[in-house]
Length: 336
Image (cartoon, rainbow, N blue to C red; front, side, top):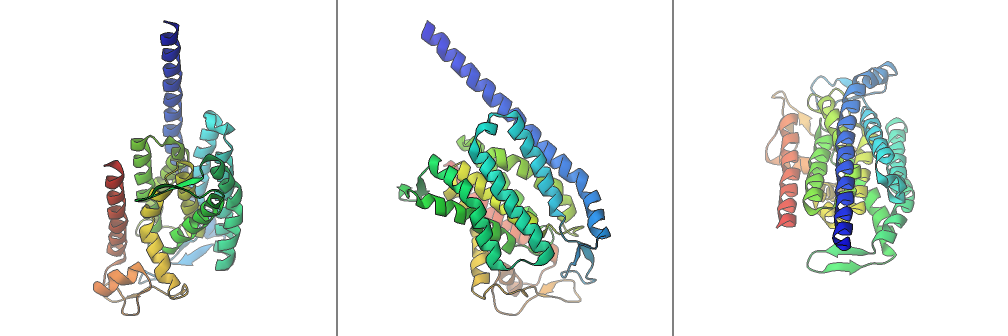
């Protein structure tokens, strides 16, 4: 009888803990969304006042719009995430604090890049260094990597390098497939929502503490970045978003799944690397309002535009559908 009462008490405590965490996660999602949506207009006015604007080259009239509007989304995320750290038991878990250090440091690199145009080599080396403390905490949690057909493969201390490299690569690849209104943020929403669903279905809840406030912030920011955009997200948000997503899959031990979800971004990185990351890659807008491109292929944009000229809106939708298809395939394979 005593054993039965003890078991019931343990189950009750576990259920209450899960219920409280679920409530905190839900609140953090909505707070991140509301804060981001609420502060973005005022933040955009400040950017215009200080002439921190950029030219939207994919519009016929080449309008100037705020360059670093994504900082508002980062702030929204931080408000939601601080709520989680304050109200849940993860405030005692060092991996969440080291993850926060890594992703905020990478976001600062993005802000500096938006203002001063940081060299690419710096954007590769410094984020790697900032990710090392987080990588060490992940190493103490797991030293194995799940590889299809091979199962769990022990990699030992190499995990430190792989996680730091993954965070750095994730941040920079997210910044590669961007340049059209809403594209990067839309891809971020698709990948993050997919990981939230997979995490819930597989009961890998650890990553949700990063994913849900990020998803809320992205949804809150999206109305200002979708076509026709009122602001660019900036390298700050793109680097931050990629680093946060990779950090979440590292914490949840969903590294292999995260890799496959990033396949379109990785392909874009490889295509641009084949031409040594050219600065000029956009097509030409003709009188029909469509983007035309007839040069060599070194971007997913070119693969689509060479087949058929498109408006910016339809091009972005096509690229979203590619990412969505990848997420659906990965999701189905994981679930079955």
